[in-house]
Image (cartoon, rainbow, N blue to C red; front, side, top):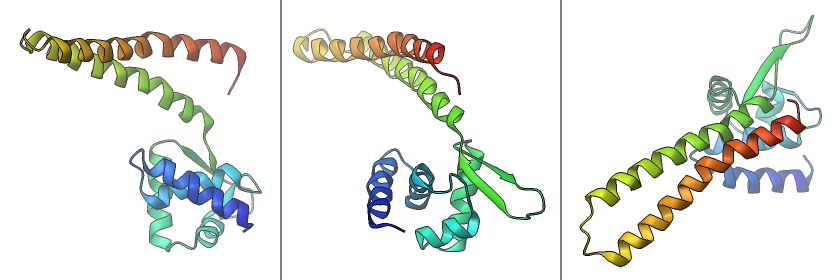
Length: 152
């Protein structure tokens, strides 16, 4: 694998790991972002990442279960080929709006329960709450606008 692609896979993998993904899962996603061809079979992924069969198998199964990738077979070929599932990536963004709603609701409740005597802290929490509400309100609008321009 070219040095630049290997470096990209590691850098992108570290970023994806920060979202709670295992190292192999993160690197499989990163590999599929730059793979040539755009779809790879199990053995190609195993070789490219120099990872164990069980780690690759578990990573692929996780990504398939979460719909981040999709698999298919070609006529006359028993191997399964894996590629990114772009629709799932949009769904992840949509779910973030729900996540922000949850954070905002928690902050709403906390502000009701907090003593009034902590004016500065309450003010800061209120500002953060407003930021979550702004994301909650605007992200669906942004996604809707993006979907009107693009088809996946």
